[in-house]
Image (cartoon, rainbow, N blue to C red; front, side, top):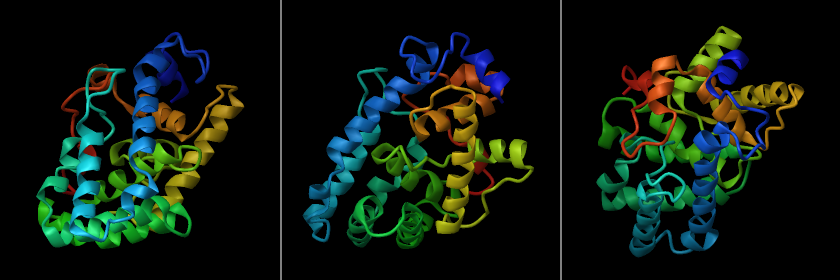
Length: 248
């Protein structure tokens, strides 16, 4: 994986080199998106989340974040495909009323982030099944954890199914994720795995700043050459997570 990463980011020195291809392709737009998330997703946004107006404001804010163009790339973020946030515009009134306070609890509630992910998924699972059909396991992993990583990249990581599946198969001989709604135990296992990867990056003196660098390393290192060439830069309509076709 180290060799593949270096072959694809040829001028790489370490993660803090802002003149490298890594920074231009993988880091700068994520930093901009993180800043936007921290500015928009504040506790004040959720103060009235229990009212219809407050719930709608939360939904609208999330949609703007995910679809707004970034100055860094001229395109929306590509960390979450439209397929996994289309439910925002399809929720019914009762579902929005449940979603908004549950999101506030996910981002700012009590307990460890793994516990908060479990609570959020339990609230949203019926809505996701109604809107998307089948068993949208990938959505239950990526949607909540992406925003945890954007707000606290020191501790949290976005769980993209194909990426972590491929990395875990290569490094552990196991897929790591279960065919089940994402829960606290699964997220804790992913966090333990991501922290172990970070320790290797640190041992290589690559100076990872946070889990965004861990996530980016895994993304670059687990793509096959054709996929990496196609998806190296953000796109306005990113490809769906190929590992979820059989799940969803």
